[in-house]
Length: 187
Image 1 (cartoon, rainbow, N blue to C red):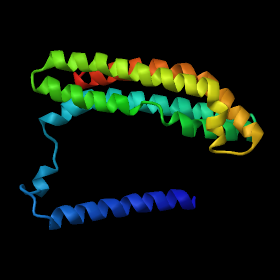
Image 2: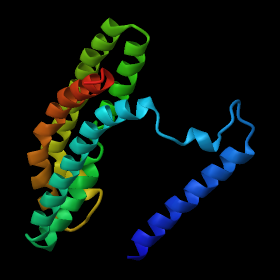
Image 3: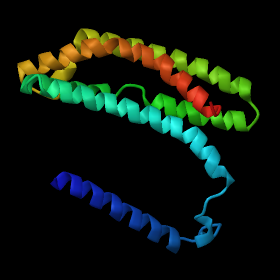
Image 4: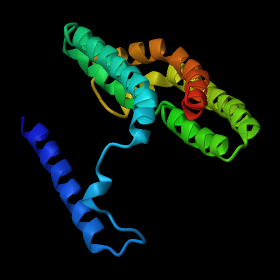
């Protein structure tokens, strides 16, 4: 409970500091109260943003369900899953956001061929990194798990989860690049 309260408090303080900084700083434009209203762009943001939000929501719900299931398997399995999740967080999920940003900038500049080439470049780079991570996780996941725990059972359970996760490192390289490309194209 204390950690949750501290997190919310820290975020609130951050927002207050950001607003104060924006008010005191000499910006090349003025922020007025009338700027905070609905405009025609809001509909477009919702059309694009709601499916993305639903996708992220469903993904996080599946991880939550998986976590609840693993927690029922015992302390070692739960700890192993937690260790594996720390390693999994290094997966190329940022590839999707960076791809969407790059593609949307190029589409907006009228360079759709460049945007399409970037998707294939992202897939290629992602596959190289994904294959490396696959090999590392599949063959040496126990060593990686050992960075986060010294308990042999926790390391073994983390390694078992990582072996199941390993193929995903290759699939996400393709999937995230494509999703980023389509998001950048308003699709």
